[in-house]
Image 1: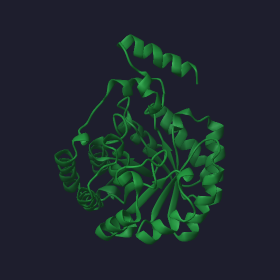
Image 2: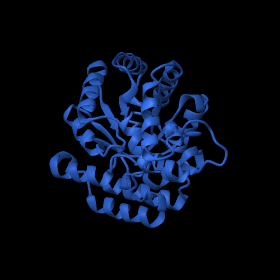
Image 3: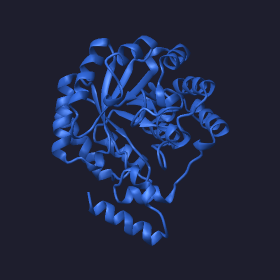
Image 4: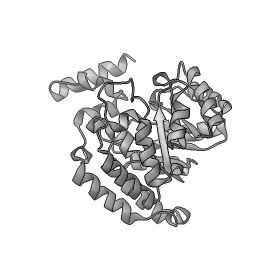
Length: 308
C-alpha cells in the first residue's frame, strides 16, 4: 500500500492553507518517519482558482517546495494541481525545486487539456497520477473514458476522490473494480468523512484491490475531513504484515499531538451542514445555501439534489 499524507494540502481548507513553514517542515519529517511514502505539500497556484493572499500550502511556490525537499528528500515530495491554473513552465519549475510526484485533477468533461500535462510530467521524470474529483457524481461511462485516456497519456495511477463524502463501501468497491478493469494499473482512494464512512470505504477499496491511499492527521481536511491517518495506519499495522514492517505508529501519534498544539483548525469536527451535503451528494459550494432551521436545510438539500 502506497500512503500519501494530505494534511498540509487538504487540511488547508480549514485554515486558509496558512501553515507556517516551520510547522510544515516538522510535519513532513515526522510523516516520513511514520512511514508515509509521500507528503502532498500543496496545490500549485490554488485549489480552484488562484486567489491573492492564499497561504503557503495553497500556492506551492518553488522556494517552499525546495525547503520541504531539503528537509525530507525529493522522493517524498508530492504536489497536486488543476490544469487550468498552470502553464507549461510550472512542471519543470516544480521538478527543479524538488517535487517528484504530481497529481493532476481531471474533470469528467473537458479533461483533454490535462492529458498534455500528464505527458509533460512523465517526460520530465515525475511519478504522475490523476485525481477524479467528486467521483460519486460520475457516471460509469465517464470513469471508463477518462481513466482510459489518462492511462494512455501516461498516468501511472488513478485516484477516486470522494469529494462529497457520499460513497458507501459498496460504491467504493464497485468504482475501484471498474477503474482497475480499465487501466490495469494502481487505483487509489481519497476519502472524505461526511457520513463517517471514510475508514470503511478505505478498507472496502483495499479489499477491491486499491493500492494507494490518502489520509490526514486527525482527519484534517475539507468539511468534516478525510480518512484519519492515525486510524488507517493502525489498521494497516494490525492487518498487513508487509505494511507494518514499514510503518511506525509512534511518530504518527506525536504528529497528532503536534498538529493539535499548533493548528487550532486541526481539531476533529463534524459540522452538520457537511453531514447533509454528504447525505445528498452535494459539493461544498452548496454549503452556503444550507441555512435556517434543520427542516429548511434538509428541504433545500433535497431540492438541490433533485435539480442535478
